[in-house]
Amino acid sequence: MSTLTGLTITVLGGTGPQGGGLARRFAAAGLRVVIGSRTADKAQAAAAKLASVTGGAVTGTDNARAAAAGDVVLVVVPWGGHAEMLKELAPDLAGKVVVDCVNPLGFDKQGAYPLHVEEGSATQQAAELLPESTVVGAFHTVSAVLLDAPDEESVDTDVLVLGDEREATDLVQALADTIPGVRGVYAGRRRNAHQVEALTANLISMNRRYKAHAGVRVADI
Amino acid sequence: MSTLTGLTITVLGGTGPQGGGLARRFAAAGLRVVIGSRTADKAQAAAAKLASVTGGAVTGTDNARAAAAGDVVLVVVPWGGHAEMLKELAPDLAGKVVVDCVNPLGFDKQGAYPLHVEEGSATQQAAELLPESTVVGAFHTVSAVLLDAPDEESVDTDVLVLGDEREATDLVQALADTIPGVRGVYAGRRRNAHQVEALTANLISMNRRYKAHAGVRVADI
Image 1 (cartoon, each protein chain N blue to C red):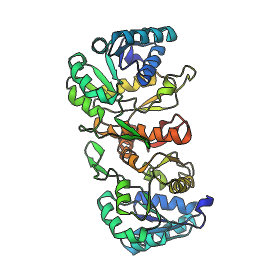
Image 2: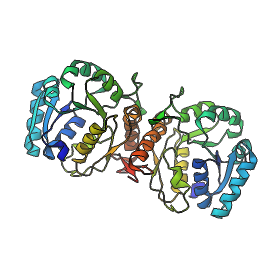
Image 3: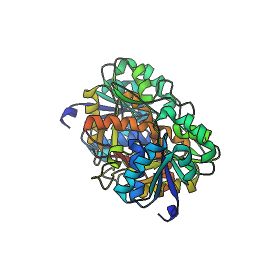
Image 4: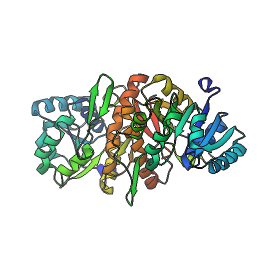
């Protein structure tokens, strides 16, 4: 926690289920949280709700202002708008740790499947579009349902953290550790992010088969 | 176990560390095991050793005869020889459940990384080359070291099982369940095999960072 003291955590896409769930958990852990959304109104409404529920310091604004306000900025937006948004926000994100949480997935009646990403993965695409930021991949496989469930105090999962800069991956592991039950685990470099992003398709298959909210735990660590 | 009664399990590449470890565990579980290798001599020597260590029924022969002898045939060969071997053995493998365990990985001084596979994954390549077989992907992420360690009675990991035919994935889950500590978990269709094969690169990164033999457990199932 000490490495996180005084940092502001921004969640771009913080009004969606995954982003909102993460924002809620970070606020509950006592971190200062800024929710970003395409429209400031929507972000403010979501922030007010989370502040009242968690008693934490949560504010909301448009994505550009939210990006500028954060020390650590989580990207939790739909894959469809990923590249475009990052291109726009690149100046605001310079010098920061950017945590890409996006799963490039397609869906059909057989379920979910990974989409082809020219750069290899969403995380690698972010790194190419944000040369002035330090890009880490994480929080891909965490169930939005469990994050955002008021009755689920503890979330039974590890968060796989991918990145090339040790200081940044350590920081994001510490951020994951603030969620009760969760453990941040270093899982390799950005070039190995694709399969972690895509693994969410497998978790969705498992959820369907087993009626569960499957998460990943790493054994022997 | 009942679904496995009377079945012969063949391990192609059963003289390597991963294949040998699996053969050893299946033999210890009381299954009839045939080890295949490029040369019959090498397979026979490995089989004799496993038979004496486990007290099980293990024989060895060349890959073609081993393929013909098995009801369930595991493919545990280096990626480099994968396609060529399966093309050759296609007639011997017709009508059988073929379990692809191959991880198409490259290695450099930064560690392991997934290789591009034209068909999408080793499992999908096998399915294309073996239209008369039922192809399942499994056992990708199980530590060879732990499988083959005489002192490690129980292996702390789940085996992710991928396939499009329920009867075959159920059978392979039951096969995984014969290894103490291991649980076979259905993890999606063959089109979602790539990321599970590639995840071994992440486990290798974790092993390096944490000095561990990392395995995957699925939470909430």
